[in-house]
Length: 305
Image 1 (cartoon, one colour):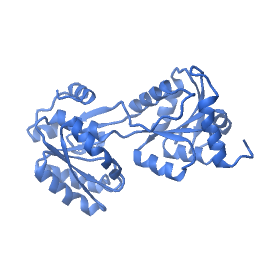
Image 2 (cartoon, one colour):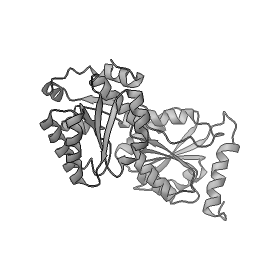
Image 3 (cartoon, helix red, strand yellow):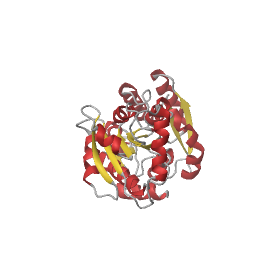
Image 4 (tube, rainbow, N blue to C red):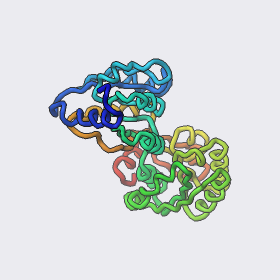
C-alpha cells in the first residue's frame, strides 16, 4: 500500500476488517502504550498477558520505540492514551485504531484531527446517568442536582434529558467559561438543589477551582459528588471512576466482543467502575450513606438501595 494516498490506505484498512476474515477468525491486535511507565503501561501489560481469541502483540510505547512492523502487520491497533493514538496516527500505514484510556473530549478532538482514519473510542469517563444513579442511591430524597459545565464537559449536555429521566433526578446546569465563573454558578445550584456534581474539565477541575468548589460545598452544607478518588479524598462526598484495573477489564471485554468481519463499533463509555465514599463528610452532613457494595448494586441496576 506504499503508493496509495493516505485517505485510500485508511479505506483499504477499514475494508480489511469487513472482508478479510470469517466471523471466527483471529486477528492480530497491536497494543501501544503512551508511556513506558504509568497507568497505560500497566493496562498494556495486563492486556498482553490475558488470553484472547485474537493474537495480542506488543506495539511499543509512544515515549520510546514503537514496534512499527508489528503495528503495520496488525489488523487493528489499540492505542492506550492520547499520546499513543497520536504516535500511531502519524504513520499512514497503520491499521484502524481503538483509542482507550482517553476522555470523550480527548477522543473527539483526536477524531477531529484525523477525520479520514478509521478509529473508535473506549472512554475512561462514565455517562452522566451513572453519576446520577450514584447520587440517587446516596440521597434517595434528592430532587435535583447542580452541575457546572466547562469547555470540555459541555459535550455531555446532550445526555442530560435521557439521563435525568432514567435516574429520576433533575439536572440544573450552567456553563463556566472561565475559572472565575465556577464558584458563583455552584453557589446558585447548591442553594436550590440537594447536591452538585463535577465532571472532568480543564476549567472546572483545575486544582485551585476544585479546592474553592469543595470549600463552597462545605460552607453551604451541601455535598459535592466527583469523578475520581482524589475528589473524594479532598472532600467530595462520593464518586465513581475508572482505575487501571477497571480499564483493563473494559479493554478485554471490548476485544472479546470484537469480530473482524464487522465495522468498528461506535465509541463507548467505560462499563466497569470503582466507588469511593468519604465517611467523614457524610457524618459532617448528617447523612447515612449505604455501604459501597450496596451503592455499586444500585448504580449497576439503576435502582435505589
